[in-house]
Length: 88
Image 1 (tube, helix red, strand yellow):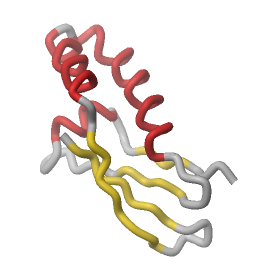
Image 2: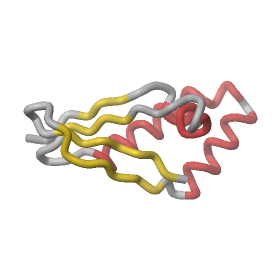
Image 3: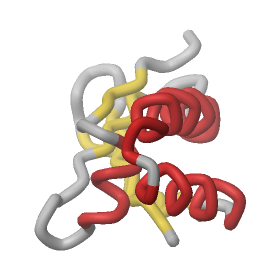
């Protein structure tokens, strides 16, 4: 499974898109959390922390806008859209 990330320069100008491959361990954990819905908030918190570190960049702003209709599983994994500011 992949999640698409859009990157923008700090000026706000579009820069590029990148697809981030989600490791199987996260997909398995999501499937377990989906079966026991009480585990879903903890999963989303852990997954978002991991994903934030994967997409953070030194110069660019990362934006993840998942489409609940086209990518329902990815949307449920993230919980809601996210924007990550650069390190610098």
